[in-house]
Image 1 (cartoon, helix red, strand yellow):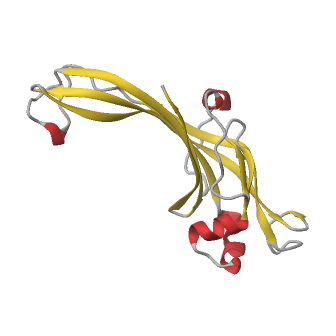
Image 2 (cartoon, rainbow, N blue to C red):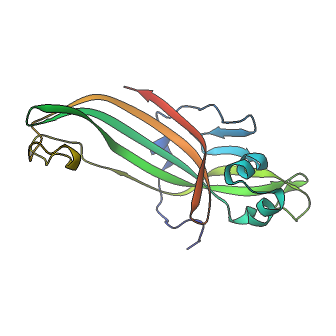
Image 3 (cartoon, rainbow, N blue to C red):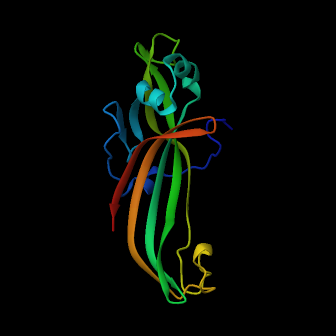
Amino acid sequence: MSPRCPFRLAVASTMVAAGLAFGAPASASVTYDPATQIGFVDRGDVRKAFGWTDEVLASRAPDIAFDHNFWTDDTYSVSCAGKAFVVVHQREFGRLALTGAPESHRGRGAAGYGGKLKGFRLTGAHAGISGTSMPPTVGQPCPRDREPSPTIGRARLVSSATGWSLAAGFGDVSRELLRQPSGKR
């Protein structure tokens, strides 16, 4: 198992590609298609995200991992003992581990192999994990911070919002490069 990807579950990209929209990059040097998980991340964007010098980035380039994260958040109006409040419930969530290869100015390959590091070519997902969770419903315990009653008396879906993000990771540190809410229903 690779240290860059702690999980190895196959996920069909068609499951997550449906309904996801293009997002505007944080800078002009990141191009990314969330439907295909293909794109290019300029070295400057990774340097800025982590606060690294060119030398540090070049030495760590082979170990940088990229992830495509996605979610659906539902907003509910919930009441306990007649007191109403809003609960945001993360119904769907997941992460796709992307294949990202360092690219030099003289062609593909890590820095030190033929030229200065240009950036990272993203060529799709190679692993992933996703999940769903149950929404708040009548009879469930009230959220801990809203305990006027032991159970939920009413729960009504108000809206849903989907989104995705592109993140770069090194070791235990992850930095978001792009974030796009895809819309509300």
